[in-house]
Length: 297
Image (cartoon, rainbow, N blue to C red; front, side, top):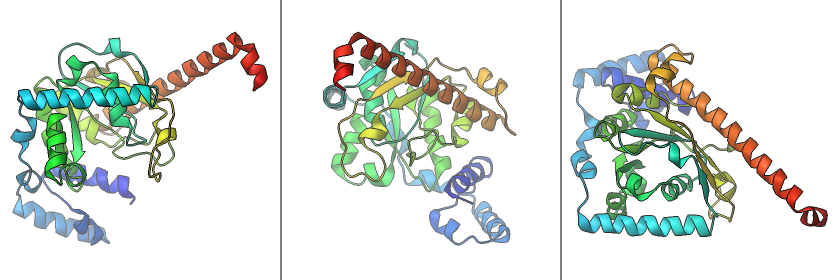
């Protein structure tokens, strides 16, 4: 079993049976018998371990005036950097509803993906926007915790993926906007990876419409394995909100969460093809309008 399969299995065990497996637990599992014995042991304990160490109410509570102003300043600086340095362009923003819960589901290829999404959204959406952040990377010191609080980041532990669903569910049920990367990790080659079932479970729990979103250019700017980013144009394309009933009806899968995740994957793949075709047409039109520049090339 690869890392994707283990993540899928741990999500299902946590969500359906309340059984949590850490990285240490997984490393010690060699056979199905090992898995069954450990699951029985954890099921017997039956304690919600993942949420004990995280003060969920603190991170989901509305920010006061000072933190709101700090968040605004940070978002303005981020927008300035993304639009000036990376020449950010975005389309489809008019497709996002003004009110109500919304799950934005982008592809994930770079650390620049989240800043690109934030720079593309208007302030009235940013005020009710939430993100999930790794508890070890983004909540390890007072400064990073202040940044996370001001920008509506809430902590999740990658060793306990079921806990992330438990925290994300009240975010959407409160009528907020949530950015959720369905692939679960940054693509190593820039291509769209398979979706983990967590996004399907989250949609089923909340009934929230999902917006497939394609981010292009961030892989070229800052791929996995590169220490510092390089300059490259970044584009963000927002698709049409997809109601849960449509996602469940128009895809294959053994369960409702698999069908919802697979359908969203298909929408995202189609949106990416559409965005690439549009970009190719625009490039062709630019070359036709500038024959001198084309001859120089």
